Length: 77
Image (cartoon, rainbow, N blue to C red; front, side, top):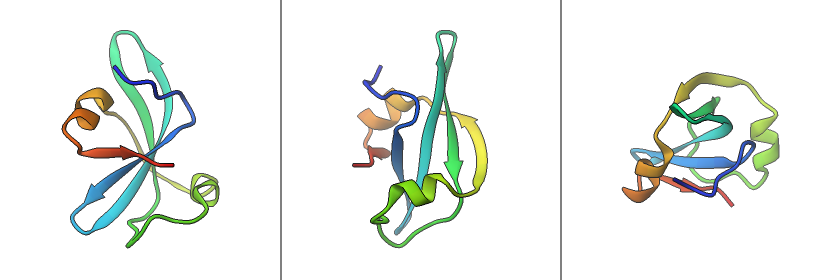
């Protein structure tokens, strides 16, 4: 699938805005579980840690491998 590990953050383009999700854990029978961080941003924040320390918008299972392959999400550096 991917080399992502729990705790890593991915960037999701939503129109002209950016959303961020943190991988929380994997289970062999399901897609990875992610915590979608609060808010849509105009640009990538300089301090991802501050965003991660903030509120959670929602939690979901997302097929990250497919989303990465289709360039729907990007690994946030």
